[in-house]
Amino acid sequence: MKPTGPTNIMTRTLITELHKQKAPIWHRTAYELSRATRSRRVVNVSSLERFANEGDTVLVPGKVLSAGELGKKLNVAAWNFSEKAAEKVIKAGGKVMTIPELIQKNPKGTKVRLLG
Image 1: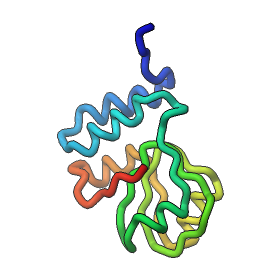
Image 2 (image 1 turned 90 degrees about the horizontal axis):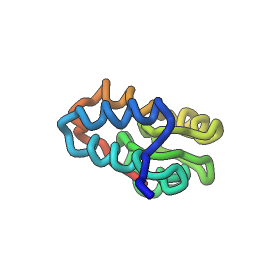
Image 3 (image 1 turned 30 degrees about the horizontal axis):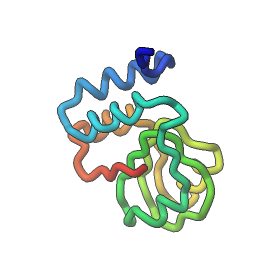
Image 4 (image 1 turned 180 degrees about the horizontal axis):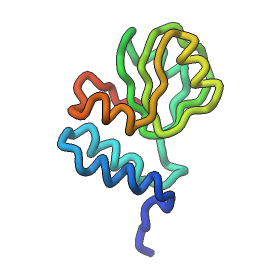
């Protein structure tokens, strides 16, 4: 059986846009989003706390969930957030954004940490 890729039109559009970018981080993100939904990255807030430094911009090519606590100010971009995870990031003084917003803000992908 031939793999078909994501059927969600928004995901397909994002993957196409990511492939148009020149920076390697966007190509890697496109690869991660092309995977089956059940195989995509799931990152808890506790992992953000553990693996990111204060002030980092973190990219999660999947979903951010709310398990754990966050005490650092981070800019977090992801395909999807649970409501509580977004609240925890904002409460810690950070910013929540989508992947297209991050591409628009930082097209070269400099100083972006891929987590997941």
